[in-house]
Length: 358
Image 1 (cartoon, rainbow, N blue to C red):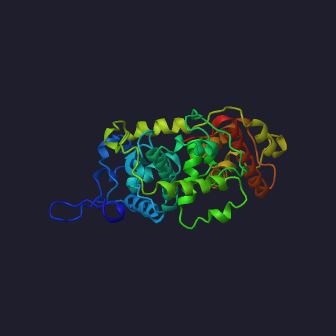
Image 2: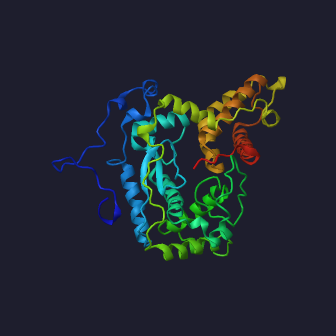
Image 3: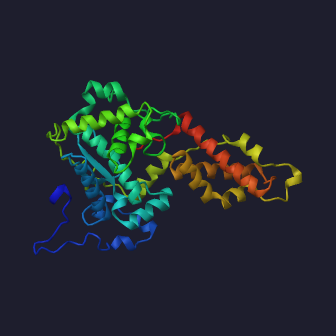
């Protein structure tokens, strides 16, 4: 690390900076060719990339709050902070624009792909890391406010969108997933510069959690961490699967697959009556507006775009099988389609399909 705890860019023996951004040969490959590459063979690192700047910004924010703690960071398959390791794993695809493009082509979005999104997740994971480093979750006051971190992680969760007992930070009301996520989200809101949490959450029950975070971190800011492991869990050099295998697993994890589940709503929105046989096919209508619907509903519900797109795909297929047509004016049909897709996505969220990914 350099001064102020920031990451220092690597240099060679003559003092010249290495160019970690030099274009590797695999960056010129097609998607099909790139999918055959093993992740460990990509030779990725954080130094010299935009991720280095974001990690350094996180360290500066910690310094501004008077904290000496610096979570170490490494590249892995996904965002996470491992149990017993006060550090942060960052998805490998954020280390190079070509891999980010492949991620978008495969999953329709890049989680943490912008500076704003990346910093939000880094602050969240830093909350997990500092909790681990100082064993904060063992404190009785922590447990009274957030619950027990030993509580089993749910595979899915059913959030209460209007609850004032939790902060709003990551999409999908993620603070409600588990006590550990509640703390990490609360920490992230507290850490963010100029978040205005005292005003935004004034009068909400969650203000007690925010005040606890502030007072507790002021208390430990000059203490040495109790847990100091620098392990890199599931780091890129150890991941021998191909990019193709990685995305096959990932798409399977976030897919839906509920044949016939949407028929009732589709038959309300569209029609298979003979008098509408010459009107626009509902399948064509949904394909035309697919991108806009995917973006809007993903934003409103906090679901992965890939998951929303899977729902749209199944709706398109059922529209084709049922030979449905657009009977109402197109502008109205578009509004109704947005509402229907949002409701169906929320139904999946509330009935056991919402992701707990971080």
